[in-house]
Length: 325
Ligand code: NAD
Image (tube, rainbow, N blue to C red; front, side, top):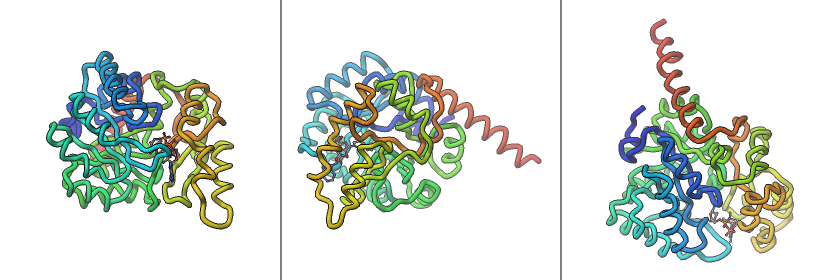
């Protein structure tokens, strides 16, 4: 299955692994790339730009296929030296970057000068058009179903993807709510050139997180996510647990929410501990509605091969038969 995106990224299958805080380590990124998709290391999971350089080298030791680095630009508890992370990416010789969150424009000149292909993740059509205008090579269109930060418009992929197809000249990936070959065939029909999956890749053998987290996703339904930080206009979709409930209780109180009141509950280091220890109630951890579609923990290679072959079968059998009847 060849699309504009497989050609531009030099990958075999139109399947990209989304940037995920604490999960996008070399183990997962290399497994996805070795399976013919595009693996992504999460830049800010590394405590310093120097650590990111080392993680890139570690990933190179694990795959000779292309992989990318994610740079997420969103509010953080501790200030992030974004410029230095961007410089580390350039210095490393990485050729594909996924930016997410706020406008990546300040970093585009250095990425472009280094010949880097930039994928910007967008949750609205106006942001997609802006990304195209400022020179991003492709966008990842992230519907309201997604894990993490869906933006504040609450528009699902059924609307976003056809709109993107009508309005964009650059190719786009579909992101959010995607787990199987049905989804791949559907979004290709809607104009996308591939899929970006985060949560689905968390429930794989190679994801470097505790088995309890993977099992919780297998057992969960599509109703088991919560939207927190709505009152702060920094909405995040996370797994519904007691910590998310506490945050929502604080946010429901009269008057404006003060981030300081919830910061001790939501700090990323507590979320990292969930992934390390398997204590699902230790902190906040991102998960998309797609957990309702996850019922196994395959290897990345089996997952990607299964998705691609299911999509090919739908396109060549079910859909084709509808025309020849
Ligand atoms: P962190 O420990 O700095 O912050 C924890 C959470 O609080 C994050 O979601 C952050 O956006 C939010 N936050 C921090 N300061 C805030 C403020 N003043 N107002 C409102 N919200 C605030 O973050 P981390 O867990 O170490 O993650 C690092 C970065 O990666 C953050 O920017 C985070 O948003 C981002 N992230 C993105 C996703 C995603 O879905 N794309 C998932 C996890 C984390």
